[in-house]
Structure formats: C-alpha cells, structure tokens
Image (cartoon, each protein chain N blue to C red):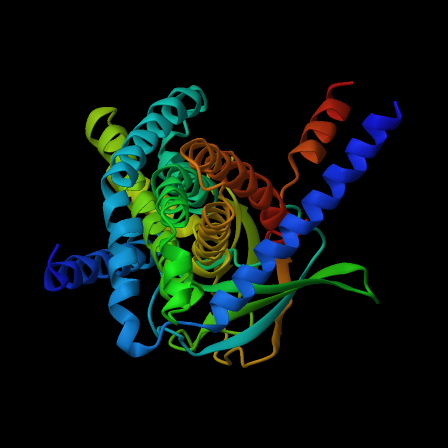
Length: 258
Length: 150
C-alpha cells in the first residue's frame, strides 16, 4: 500500500521532470535557430521528414477522400441532398481529418525516424563527441529537425486535404454522378478561407511542433542501448499520436467558439 | 544524396504546399483575392427573421447583390433589425422597394429577396426599407392550418 503510494508520487515527479527536460530542450533549440550557413541542415531534414512522407500522405488522403464520398453519398442521397457532398467532405477534410490524420501519419513515418536516428547517435556517442569538439548538438541536430517539422507538417496537411477533395470529387462526381456544378459551388459557398482553412492550417502547425518535439525529446533521452532505442521509438509514436488527438480536441474547443 | 538534388526536391515540396494552399483558397473556399467591393448599408426591420444568418445573401431577381451584415434586436419596436451590405454597383434601388425573407428550396438556407418599386428616389447609405415581409415559419403555418380544420 505504502509502496504503491510512493510509486505514484515517484511517477508524478518523473512526469514533471520529463516535461521540464523536454521544455528545456525545446526552448534552447528554438533560440539556437540554424544560421543561414546551416540552412542546408534544415533542407536535409525537410527532405527526410517532409518529402519522404509525401507518398504515404497523398495515398491516405486519396483513400480517405474517396471513402468519405462513398459513405457521405449513401447518407445524403436518402434526403435527396447529394449536392451537399462536396461541402461536407471539404469541411471535414480541411478542418479535422486533414490535419489530424496527416499528423498521425507524420508521427508514424517521420517522428519514429527522428527518434531512432537521434537515439542511435546517442548510443554511438556521436552526441557527446560533438560536444567534445565544440559543436552544439542542440543547434546541429535538434534545431534543424524542429524547424523542419514545423515547416513540413502544414504542407503535408494541405496536400492531404487537396488530394482528399480531389479523390472525393472523382468518386462523387465522376462515378456516383453528383452534379458537378452543385458539388463545387456548394463547397465554395460553405467553406470559408479564414474560418475553416486557416484554422486547419493552425492545427497542422501545432501538430508539427508537438510531434517533432516529442520525437526529438525521446531520442535525446533514449537509453543508449538497442532495446532503449526501440522503446523510445515506440513511445514517440504512442505519445505523439495521443498528443495530436487530445490537442485536436482542445484546439477545436478554442478556435471554433464553444 | 547530393545537396543540390535535395534542394531541388525540397523546393518542389514547398511549391506543392503553396499550390495546395492556392487550390484550397480559390477552388475550395472560393476566396477572391482583393475583391473587396465597395458596399453601402441598407436597413430593414422584420417581424421575424427566423433562421436568417449573418453572411446570408441578398438577391434581386435571383442575382446576388449583397449580403446580410448584421442582425440585431430593435429595442423599441422589438422587431429584428437587419443591416444589409449592397454592392455599390447596384445603386438604383427605389425607396419603395420591398424586402422579403425567402427560403432556398424546401430545406435550404434563408436569404433576403428584394423587389424593386417604382419610385424615382433611390435608397442611400443607411436608408430603411419600410415594406418588409417576414420569414415564413413552418410551425406557424401548420398551426393556422390546423386551427382552420377544427
């Protein structure tokens, strides 16, 4: 009994310590933003995190858009309002599914890679040797990844939404026969740039930050063994997926006037 | 991988992001760049605006000429005060025009339809349309219909 209470307290302290350490890493890395001479480091990371995630994002976006069109059509056709299909799919994709699902994919595809890479660097003592020759690993390793995630994630989310809407129009208009004019005009009428598209972009920026932050922290704090790296990679995917979903709830709560 | 190749691919990636943003802005949300048209305000009081929302369209003969800018309660007459923003191209609305709240289809949204009168004087910025017809509330109509039956 006493032991379990002690354990609970220990867990609480560990959690707060972890948050503090993660915040510290983030804060220091953000201020050591890469100098212009180091821009190629950021480019390389945008390539690693963003460009290499394009294929999975585009494929998932297309399938989700297509499925939304199929399911939405089935429901809407009962009320004879299948012309609202474009509007429904576009709103759902732009505000919710685009940022959230691409955030989850980003966590699985890019976050895990970042953790594994940094964890391995730590295990092979590259990080400490960098410090020894006077190169700051926060600036050289952590900061470019944070900035790359921050830049790549909104682009991926935008691509996801666009491809999803294209997929839904392919299914809805070309296959199921929703009238094309009504499909697009209902969408343009109902989707507002400022109050829907922009809020979706804000969400994706936040998700990009949080996912790369968790990934970098887990890599940095990984136990320098193969088992430790594997655990850290798993934790990255689990923590960042949960963080994306929970943050999505709160962002929606704040941004959409509840 | 060559640094140059990476730069090209990253550039293409960023460009794809910008194109996606443009598609979302123009094709999906119908965002008009810099199309901030000049408008003037016309007021109308309605007994009941039931279901009319801000940004609902204002049309003449089915052509959109403006939008609803503000809906508030007139504290003296306890009627709904609606401010409409009419495009300034459409300047010659006679002062005896009427405004009616109409419904788009059976389940569609509400909008304001203006019917032009015959007077030679025209509505100016801040003018009131006096002849208005309120929103038809389906429940009221059903109620009246039932009363007639019994």
